[in-house]
Length: 356
Image (cartoon, rainbow, N blue to C red; front, top):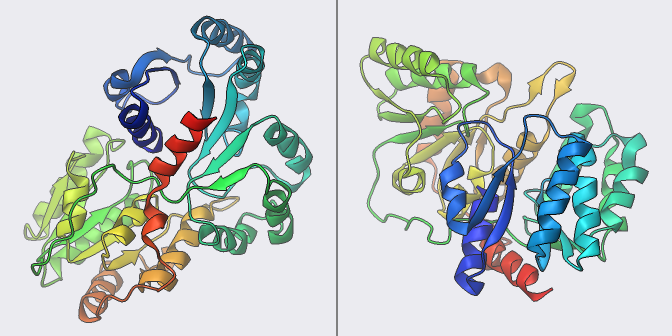
């Protein structure tokens, strides 16, 4: 979604069309990318041979700029494929930029030297969060993963001060309008839907013991059989939970909800922009495969907007229903540190890309 929003803003401001290399599961909206240029699907696994083919395509296209999404902060397995692409960009004089959705990287402490060297080859590293917002929370949570210390994590960002630009959050060009009237449902989301089944099932159970109906978005990665399972659970609970597969109007649902109950993925930034009450159940991974980024976002939303936090041990229908009732009863208060500029990441990123 970050890349689509960025492409839309570049097209709006400059009208240019791009060459888009795309590797994604079948649920990804490939057709939407075709509005912004020629889409070249990538093979299932990255390889040096694939990288050489992409480099030839890039040299023929001769772009003014090459933008890599996630890499080099993530997707390290793509290095054999991306390295020839970066070399081709240098050969044709294209500027090299990274588009990174958050101040977070997947390298272990022993890999920092290599990561810093990769970053040094870029002209700009666009990190899509406000400066001083997400980064300290990510550093605080990173210890959960046991792969790098907070001090070492922060040292990489300090060393890249001349290249990193904190752009602000990349939100839809036309965000849903906040609704003034009193709303009467709880929105439950879990991102793409590839994780957090237990959270979703507990939320369905919470709907059956709540005084307010729930609308639950399963996400596009939810298999049909699993979606049918969720709908059977909802039906057995008295019909107070409506299960939705993957609506196009998720932002409108956010705007209309009395409370947003969610894992703490990137959609929380849209909830923040819409001034929504939140109850967050961050996905923390599994033993020896822990993830800390959603926990960091949940802490951030707690401090900025009073979000309630549910840890994995709290994912029972009774606890979820109680958290929703408590959040409904309290007024929404927004930290004074939140500024309108925090939500203009697409505009700022497009301006930087087009200006290089």
